[in-house]
Length: 84
Image: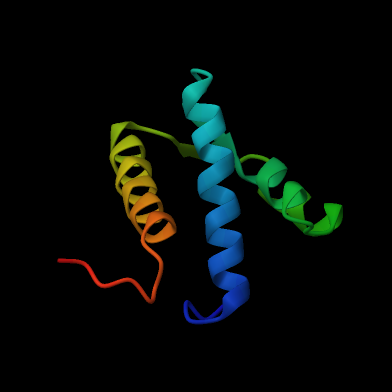
């Protein structure tokens, strides 16, 4: 998948949001097969990754906080606004 593809951005965003929910609820591991199923990957393909896990650590928390700040800044300032 090309990182400039809109689908790539959508999948990346959904993964970060799901990982954020897990992080906020004290879960520090992401089951790869389950994530794939949530994203619509067929069960037969996702099942090949059922033994894989991704650790959700403090680096993720920092990344999520930074992405959240960027999103909030973009959402609050209209594109036609002039900032002084």
